[in-house]
Length: 236
Image (tube, rainbow, N blue to C red):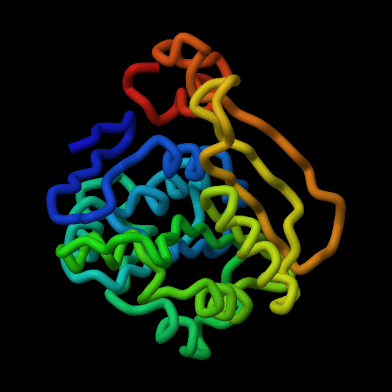
């Protein structure tokens, strides 16, 4: 169980647990003001609930293919103050995107997708689904975003640097272009281990940022990280 200031994430049934980089995505991404927001692969419902806390009038759809994670997200949303604005769907995003009622409806889309491709797979099918791209290849993800995002919308995604480079290259064929990137490091002397990138349909210069989670002692949170997560983490 992970307690935040305004909601609680229970995660015993979900393969993908709460992690620091996902929390950074939820706190950093531009979630807009009002409108409709989509969380692709919601897992426990973490990103949907973080977005609901920041965007106080958004209607949010959260899509999850895994049955146990879906059930966990439903419970977490129901127990939150945002239950009236967040709806969880047990569906593959490919099928969800094919429904005309959803197409070009979302001003913001958030994604913390599986990214392993050829690495050793787990005997646990739920872990494989959460971590490996088999159920959601990057081309399928980009196709879904292309169908669902409004012409003036933004798509925000979290990936390791190599996979982000792959997605950025593929995205051009879907007319999606990066405009904002955050490089995330454990501390200033460590390499970048995750990137948060915002995409839109407009080509423009990319805005670059960097964030270290810890000071160089590896234990003390940086002021920048504290300020980013202050409205979520109980310890801040």
